[in-house]
Length: 461
Ligand SMILES: Cc1cc2nc3c(=O)[nH]c(=O)nc-3n(C[C@H](O)[C@H](O)[C@H](O)COP(=O)(O)OP(=O)(O)OC[C@H]3O[C@@H](n4cnc5c(N)ncnc54)[C@H](O)[C@@H]3O)c2cc1C
Image (cartoon, rainbow, N blue to C red; front, side, top):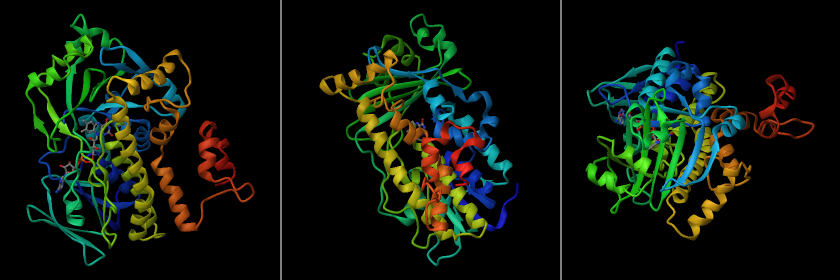
């Protein structure tokens, strides 16, 4: 599919968010050029969760077909005390069944490759070795972008998808500096399943495909399978004072000692890790995501980096791309201007990203509780789910009904469509007789109805 040359959108950064946006915007009918600083397209060697809210997008765009078996589904989620005692959890079928969507686990490299392939299939131009060095946007209208190698590009809209150290954000808001909210940081590590299966003590942990979380004071470990179930991926949370703000190489003795009193099965796996790095967890808070002229706009970590405890950083970045795609489709069809599209995007997405930043931080606070009355209350509240009780509220946010619907059930494209209707028609789309809005019909009724029976379809909302 080739783009509409009338609207040329530039993306600075071909990370997970930038490539997702490229696909969504090309599908909207615009011409898309992505400028990427790296020598080669790729991602760091670690796993990532593709929660149902973004599994929805991978399916809609056909990226799931390209990634294939490397998208791994798991059977159950277990929350444990650091010694391995199970205090909470849920079968994944309950969450996936309620949302009608999978919860995938994937190696970042496989995800990135899949997104890049689909972006190319949609006609996006992706240029590597193209580090953006200066942006001229002040005169309004078109944006001129220069790369370090001296090449220049002109766009109708420039999107800053260049991550937490974003040059686009520094150009628009030079005084904003992402910072760690606490001393919290994380190691990332991968161990082959084949190696774990040879260990008489650790092998028990890989008999089923599960997501495991071991919680402790100021530390936790989360593990899950990736790469068609061949690798055991871990994120190992801990704290440092003073807080870290850059990626650091670590002494492996310190790394192993950090978790020496954890579940002996997990400890055996941690001892198998050959090398690891420490990653900062930086949060970015902005009052605006765009230039006053509305011809440059930020997305992803550049706009709203967050701590990782809900697995929503890349997911939120992909949602931004999906939302922008829907807004820019209306520009391509001459129904709104680029400036309108940027305004609708900021109005819709800024509160959602802020909510995810807060929930992510709070989930970290829940998992990091020290032993004592708060931890005991958390464990008591979670433990009921182990007896199969269907809780209305749970401190296990990965299965808490309200959080699951709000975060993992969110539909970025439907949200954009609602906001666009409100903007274009001056009111929310609703049934004239009953006043039921499309959004409410979807939330309460349509989710369990077959396509032809949905209230929003029958009432033509
Ligand atoms: C330990 C840990 C675990 C995590 N787990 C999850 C998870 O399970 N699920 C999840 O959704 N998120 C997770 N995240 C968050 C996720 O990694 C980030 O939020 C996500 O990668 C951000 O994507 P992005 O595309 O916005 O930015 P980035 O991935 O940072 O991509 C930015 C791109 O821009 C390029 N670039 C930078 N500067 C320039 C320039 N001047 N010119 C051109 N190109 C440039 C970079 O090379 C890069 O390719 C985790 C994070 C951490 C630290």
